Figure (cartoon, rainbow, N blue to C red):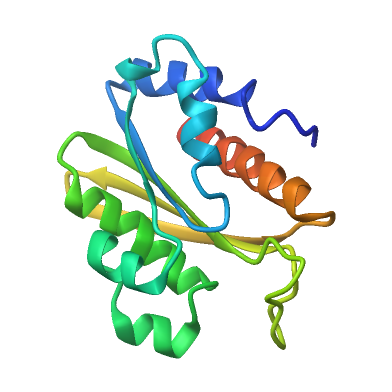
Length: 167
C-alpha cells in the first residue's frame, strides 16, 4: 500500500460511481476529512461526490449520523457496530447518495485500550438498494505513526469500496 492519500484510487472509484449513476458520501472520525479531501482532489468529483461528515465526538455521531447511544456505550466509538451505524446514518440523512463509507479508529499515538490498539480502524460500508440500506464492516490494524495510519485508512477505504462495487 502506498501513501498517496488515496488520490490515485479516488478517480477510479469516481468512474465506477458515475457508471452506475451513484453519488457517494462519507463519515469520518479518525481521518478527520482526509477521505473527503481525497475525493475532491479529482476534477469533476461533483458528478459523484455529495458530501462528507467529520464526526469526531460521540455527540456528533449521534446528532448528525443517528448512531444509537446504546451502540456507543456497548461497543465504543471504535467498533464495527458503530462504523456500520455511521455509514447507514449517512444514507439515512442524505437523499442523493447510494454509497457511503465511514471511518472510525485510533490513529494514536495515544488512545489505545485493551483489545483496541493504536492503528485499529473500523470501516463501515452502506449501500442504498431497492430493499433499503445494506451495511457491512471491516476492521484493519495499520502500522505507523498518526499521519501514516490516517493516510493508510483512506487508501484502504477507497480500495475496499472499489472491490465491493466491482463484485
